[in-house]
Image 1 (cartoon, helix red, strand yellow):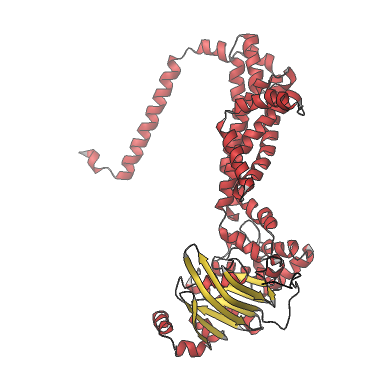
Image 2 (tube, one colour; image 1 turned 180 degrees about the vertical axis):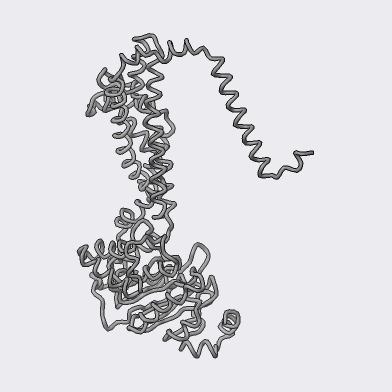
Length: 265
Length: 257
C-alpha cells in the first residue's frame, strides 16, 4: 500500500541503494571466505618483494616501457603510411591491403618469432639490436597493421569539405594531407589509439620468445624469473600492479586531453 | 585539342574574361547533371545562379575550379584552359576564391591560422606578412576580435565571414560562392550578404549560387536560371525576376518568391 505511493524518483534511489548494499555484502562474503594468511604468504610475500626491488622497476618495467614506446611510435608512423597507401589507387593499395590482412591475421607471437628466427635465416640479414631489435621489429609490424586500419578510419572520418577547402586555396594533395587531413584524423583516433597502446604494452611481454638476456628482460619475463627463483607468485602480482600503474593514469590523462581538444573539433 | 600548345601559358591574360565555360558536360555514373553549358563571365560581373535543387547549379560552380572534373568541355580561367593536364592547377586555384555552404574552416586551427596557412604554404609569404594580411582581412569582415578563437566558438555567420576572409587573403581575381547562406540561421544571413555586397561594390568578379533572390536583385549584375543541366534563361536580374520569359523559370520563381 505504502509502496504504491512512493514517487518514481525516490523508488529509483531506493533500488539503487539496495544494489550497492547487495554488492558490498557479496564482496565482504568473498573476503571472509578467503584464506588471508595463505594469500599474504603466497602472493604478497614481503621478503620476495624486497628482494625484487628496485630491479623489477629499473630493469623490467623500464624495458617494457622502452619496447612499447619505440614500437608504438615507429608502428604508428608506419601504420599511417600504410593507411594512406591503402586509400590510394593501384598497386600500393593492393600491397597495403595484403600487408594489413597478413599481420592482423597472424598471432603477434608468431610474427615476433618470424622476425627473430626466420628472417635472419631466410635472408641472411642481421637486425640492429640483436634479439631485442628483431622482437621489437615484430611488434612494430603488428602495431602498424592495426594502426593502419585505425588511421584509415580516422582519415575517412574527416569531412570531405576539408580537403575541398584546402585544395581550392591552392594547397597540393601532399600539403592538404599533411596540414589539414592528418592532424584532424589523429584527433579522431585518440580513443582507439589509446586502446592500441595499452594492448601493445601488454603484448610487449611476447618478446620473451626471442630469448632475452637478464638486462633486456621486460616486466613479465622478469616476474616469471622471480616465480621460478622464489617459488612464489608474488612477482607476478607485483608485475600486474606495475602494469596498472602505467595504464590507469594513462587512460585518465588521455581522457582529459580529449576534453581539452574537444573545442577544436 | 592542344596541338601546337605544348607549353600552356601559366600567366593570366588580363584582357581575357575571368571565367569561360565551353560546352561543359558532367555525368555522375549514368546520370548527366550538366548537359552542355556555355558561359562567359566578364571582369567585375556579379553572376547569380539560381535553379531548383538537383538542377546542376552547384556542380557548375564546382566545375569552375575543377573540384568537379568535366566529362566533356573546357573551363578557361583568364585565358588559360585549366582542363589541360599540363596546367599547374594549384597555382590557378589561388586566383579563384571559393566559399562553401558548410564554411569548411579548419577546426583544429585558430581563426588566424586558418587564414595564414595557405598564404605561407602556397604563396610562400612570411609568417609576419601572412598575419598582417590576415588581420587586415578580418577587419574587412568585421571580426578583428576573433583572431585567436577556434571555429567552433563562432556563430555560423562569423564562420562564413572568416571563410571569406581566408579566400580574400590569397588575393583572388574572382570568387565563387556555393550557397553561402543556406546553412545559416535566418538572422545571420544579413551579415554575410553585407560582406558579399561590399566585395561586389569593390569590383570583385563573383559567381554566386544562391537562393537569396533579394541579393540577386540588388547586387547581381546578371542572373542565370539553370534547370535539368542547361541554362534555361539569363539576363538582367530585375528583368528575369519580375518578368521571366520561359515557363520553367516562371514556375520556379512562383514557388520561391
